[in-house]
Image 1 (tube, rainbow, N blue to C red):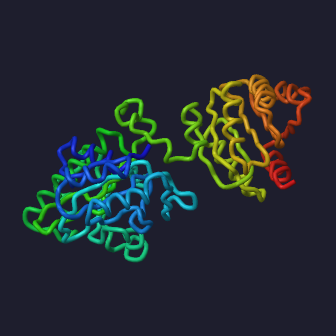
Image 2 (tube, rainbow, N blue to C red):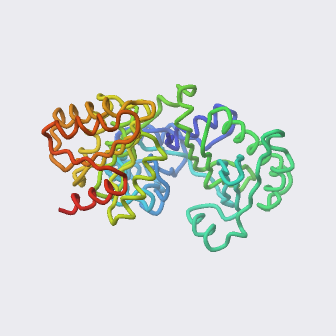
Image 3 (spheres, rainbow, N blue to C red):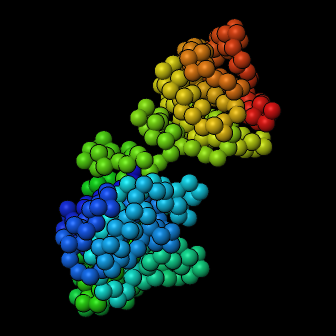
Amino acid sequence: MNLHEYQAKAVLREFGVPTPRGVTVAAAGQCAAAAAELGGEAWVIKAQVHAGGRGKAGGVRLCRSAEELSAAAEGLLGKRLVTYQNAPDGQPVSTLLIEETLPIARELYLSITVDRAAERIGLVASAAGGMEIEEVAATAPEKILRETVDPITGLMDYQGRNLAFGLGLAGEQIAAFVKLVKTCYRIFLERDLSLLEINPLVVTADGRILPLDCKMGIDDNALYRQKALAELADFSQIDPKEAEAHHHNVNYIALNGNIGCMVNGAGLAMATMDLIKLSGGMPANFLDVGGGATAQSVAQAFQIILADANVKAVLINIFGGIVRCDLIAEGIIQAVKEVGVKVPVIVRLEGTNADKGRELLAGSGLAIIAANDLNEAAKRAVVEAAA
């Protein structure tokens, strides 16, 4: 789960990290009051969407009057902001963050994430922060600094100093940076984050170090113990089908193909998608109904899959380990009748009571195609989707 910038900065402030002063607005008419509250002669208005590249897409603007702020707000609120990270459809803008301007001397980059290769938490920093950080990483990787945290010792001060030296910081800035890094590491652990990214981290003309932007991603598996953060979820920022799946506790990710997939188990779902691709087709989604699939969860999964107008066939691949295949077959029959499925449905059952499950499907009188193995099922789904 991702947080908006203004939400992430609130978490930073909760842990004592200073941030630029800002006010959120949801209507253009609130801009004049926000400008008066912040004071000054210029402000930055930022569209709050779960995507990077906002500046290049016109989602971050410098305004020098309350009238200019209101006009910028009118041009952003209620629209969909399209960036290189969320193309082609973009994401809706319902909230804006208006912040004070700062005298920026330098722009740096800092992030904390999970280094899966090292199986540890990793820190990444660069003196080349700002909108071009992805290009820097691709074209000049030597400018990217890294530190890996030993889970036994935790983040050490010398690691923070290594990064500070590499960033060209000096004097009191080094101590301020080390304190910031250690606090961010603490936030990462205590809030169960999968990502904490500050870009840019700015050095002001008077020597302060402040996060000008901040992104936070929370491990979905830890939301049960991060209830306050879970309540901040903005489901308008994700695919509506993914939002619906979340509410039904179904693991679903929308893709760009035309073969809907319903599988029990994440690994089996990945293998199913691979075989569809190998057979010349394209999966329309990743959908894992879980090891304890029921008739109800199958029906809900059907509804979510068929909400995608691109789906031309549905491939169901169930391995009956925890659940019995005959019960799943009954659920599939019930779901096809209830949902009114009008596209070909190909089913592969294997495991406990698989033969009985296939008998039920064959005797249902419905247009359900039973496959004996997964290769056959994938190939048949590709053929049916292209028909």
